[in-house]
Each structure stands twice: as C-alpha cells, then as structure tokens.
Length: 175
Image 1: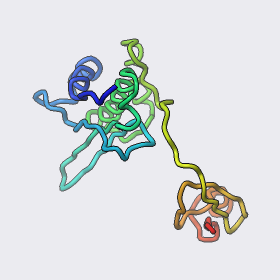
Image 2: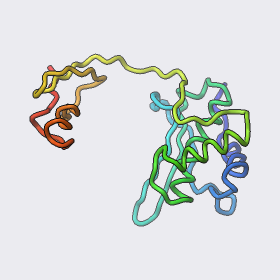
Image 3: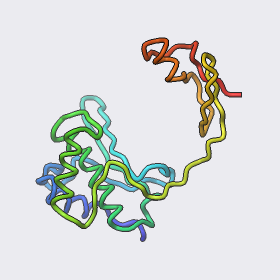
C-alpha cells in the first residue's frame, strides 16, 4: 500500500474516540506526518517540545515500517500515538503506557473491531545485527551492542554495588 493521507484518519479517530479534544477550530493541536525514510526501528512515536513557553507536539508514523503494511496497522499505530497525545495535551499527565493509556486503549478496542490498539506491535522491522562486544570492568560480563557506546556502565554491577547509581568502576569497555 502506498503512503496514505493521515489527516482524514486523524479527524475520524478524534471524533470517534477522543470527543474532538485533539483539535481547536477543526485544526489538530498536534502535527501528524509520515517520517522520512530514516525511522526504521519503530512504527511511530509521539513527541512533545516546549520552546519559549509554547508546547508543540507531533505524531510521526514510520514510512519504511508502515508504507507497505495493511491499513489496520496504520490505524492501530496512529490511534496508539493519538492516545499519547491525548494523555499529554488533554489530561496533562506525564506517562508512557500507564493506567490512563491502558484504559483508553481498552475503551477504543471495545468500541470497534476494525483494528486493535496495542502497546507493542509485531510488524516486521529490520534491525542491524549485534556486532560489538562490551565488557564490564567490574564483573567481566559481556554484552552485545549494535554500535560502540561511550560512558555506559553495567546495570547489574551499578545496582549491586552502588545503589543503582552510575559508577566508573562498572564501565563497559569495547575492544
């Protein structure tokens, strides 16, 4: 399926599931757009930016992940991100997949059966292979990574010896 316009779907879902709270004078309070071709590891995301006291937010759906996907996957992902926007912008609550999210998700899923909103998707996503080995200086455990990282520490050691705080004794070093 080719990339489809998202705004008409947004307005439909806003009316059906969010009592038109995500618009002011029929204009979305959140930008809705397709990603460029770089967003390859997630189906979409909601982003909030506060600059000079003004809140701006956007929903971005992944063109590489969803462009050739079934329509119900696009609907599910858009609705998922709209729940994030509703919780943030309307309820003014800072949560990810908490009680408000789950409650709204369940309500939407009961209201219709064309698609299912979930917390995680199972769409095919191409991942880079784990090709770098990092070793904890403290315990010697090895961890696989997609890229070399700087200033990361072994969570196990930090939790065990430093009350969960980052400590340079637990640094993970790459060859």
